[in-house]
Amino acid sequence: MAKAGTSPLHVTLLPGFICRRQLEVIDLGGRQQKLIAALALSEGPLHREDLACRLWPDVPAPRATARLRQTLWRLNQATDGRLLQVSNASIALHEDVHVDYRLAAKWAVPTTGRGGAGGSHDDFLGMWNLLRYPLLFGWDVDWLQPYQEKWELRRMQALEALAESFLGQGRHALVLELADAAAQADPLREGPRRIAVKSCLQADEIADAHRRFHQYRMLLRDELGVDPSDAIPRMLWPGQVRAA
Image (cartoon, rainbow, N blue to C red):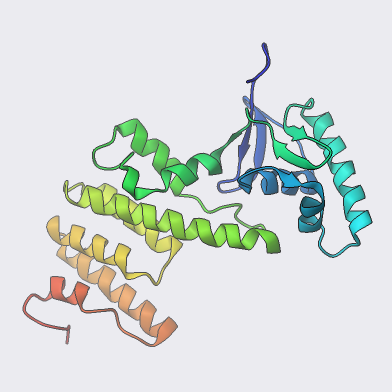
């Protein structure tokens, strides 16, 4: 638990890195930011050697270890020793540190039903504010890429599931906002496009439904040389297998 009279630290990874204490942003260098990010994305403590090799894979192990010691010292100075839990063998974030990505990873589970059509307005806003953003946008780091790809898939699936849940309530504006965000995460995926077109048809926005399908079809043809499946054309042209 946080010490009396102190405020817990907050680490933001969506969409970019921020470390703050209440409203005060803590000024950290690139090495310090990357170390915090590696720990925030880990499911548990990391061994010192593993963390050093992950952060500095292109330098000899003794030099990487020395950089790790230096970075840890600077972090402890900048955060009054309240950010990290350090032992002789491993390093982790302190249990009181709040990480937005960790909360987002819990939200991005459609089967929980939190924040969906049956959830509260505050639940939905909390979920939306987390799921709308990519992970550490603009960071080009080899060890980070698998985490970014996994997050893109999880948030896209969660956004699509949320859009589907609001579709049944006829909440057209929310459906489009969520479906468009999912399509932005994976522009070639058909699910969000289908949901958006269906919502447009339910709202009698026929022209918008056709416009969206045309844009998606052109994207697939340009990128992959293929057409969408029959699912959307069957909604737009009932009784026909495909559009002419």
